[in-house]
Image (cartoon, rainbow, N blue to C red; front, side):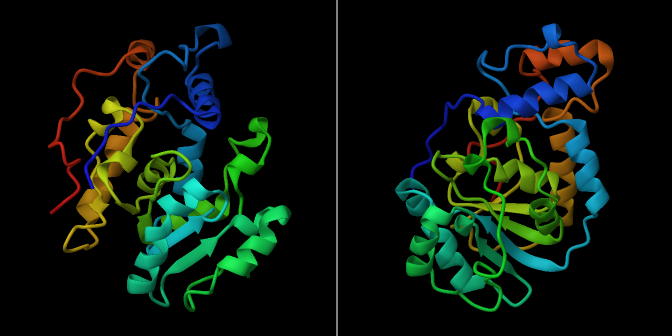
Length: 258
């Protein structure tokens, strides 16, 4: 698959997190930079980081995926590889769950289309939070179960959804879990986010192994570029207005392969 570069604006949920990040960093409402000015790097508030760290990062699972799959045709097409990967690689230490059943009007479709993949598949045993099924004002909800799962997993499958990118990629990094993606296009919304230089695995990588050094490097990089927690007050405004010119640059492949 040829890598294509995205050019996607902040979603309503990311706008909420952008505003929350600045408010928690001491910005007044009138001083928050315009989230729709382009390009922007997605930000997460300090309170999210604190809650994730409180969950701990002890790895008791290998792989995980928890999310919508049959919610629409585009999402189903973009996430078909997740089913195939789970069948080939998931173990009793893995976790898999399709969360579509949260929507009653689609529950019959899930029952018809989804077949339990193995002992790791909890689709019909648990429900899940689906942000796009909630009112916009509720989409910045911190889903403890979702983050706890990633915090306890070495690897997180991060497919595209109804757009050629998913917040799951950054949330996995925040949770110290290594992302696995189908292609580089699924690792960011724009050129600035690609240039952050995260470590990850692509679906076609010949070998996937847990790298604690990658995990820690990703987490430090995330704090530096996707939060305002490590910026001094005098630099917060300048660095939220524009892409920092000291960002690490990696190879066009995204720096994910070994």
